[in-house]
Structure formats: C-alpha cells, structure tokens
Length: 205
Image 1: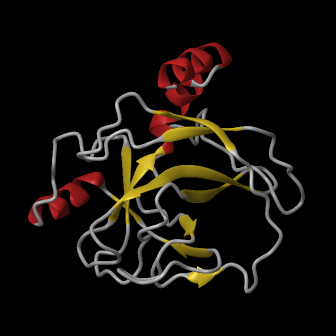
Image 2 (image 1 turned 30 degrees about the vertical axis):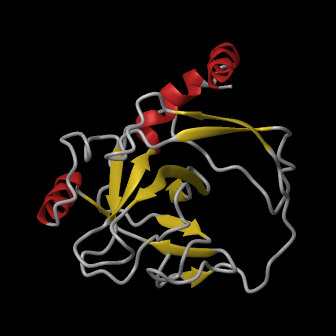
C-alpha cells in the first residue's frame, strides 16, 4: 500500500493460527480475476478479546444491497509501500474512493488490460484515485476493504471487499480492483456449510 498511514508504531502481541483448509470459489478465473475469493478454515478458534475482534460480513439488507459508489472505505495491509519496494514492517491503512465499474473498465481498456466482458461486473469493486499516488500494492492481496456503517447507537465495520489486483501500484488512471464481498457472501456461506464443506474439501485433497 502506498501513501498510507501507520496504524501502530510498534508490533504488538499477535497469534499465529494454522490453516486447516481453504475453499476457493468454483468459478474463479485467474485470467481476469473473476470470482477471486476464498474462505479459510482454521484449525482452532480465534481467541477474541478487546484487541482482537471479528469484522461483519454483509449477509442482509441494507448493507447487502447498498451501493458504495462514492464512499471512501478503508483498506489495510502489510504489502509494499511503493511499487517494487519493500513490504511494510507494521500494519498500514488507507482510505480510497469507490468508483463506477464502467469507469474502471474504460481505464483498463485504454491500457489494454481488459481481458473479458465479465471483468468489471457486479462481482468487483473498483477503488482508487485517478491521479494516482495512493493505492494497495503487492502483498496486500487478500486484505480487507472495510467501511463503518452507522447503527442506532454506534458504527459497525463491514468488510465489503477483498484486495484482488491492479496494474502496478498507485499508477494514474488505473485504480485497484477488489472482489465484492456483497456479491459472494451468501453463496460462499452455503459452500462452507458443514455438509457441503466436508464434501468440497474431500475433493480438494
């Protein structure tokens, strides 16, 4: 991530939890990045605390059906701080505006990176500054695109996107592409139900 803010000045206590299995979307296409989303199944529960808490996933309206065009959600990660540079040693965060998918499609067509008609369908969010300078970067892939949603008394953070891909880092006229969690939350939840997850994992071994 380039031109971002530091979340902490020092590394704090953390937990390393081994992965049991991962379940990728069955329609994932590595050529155009379509359906670039997976679910990670851990070997043990996460020890939630005042410093470690889950983020909400949009399963129901109004968050599930809301358009976030024009909003400026947060993206966080330990990726490179500039194109071709070193990875961050501490967690970084940045706010990026969400653009219309049509605009991103035209920008990617201009630089001959439009691979297919479905590349910028409802399954992705496009976010970034057209003038460049701020962006997620290599090593941030798989990280969250998050937005606070106001409730009656407070704000609740929802993950609305997953860092997918881009052209370099923070280049002008080529915003980053994020998988839309809204589009896939329900189908991925069904895929990971106990019965189907067991069957799917058996085929993946």
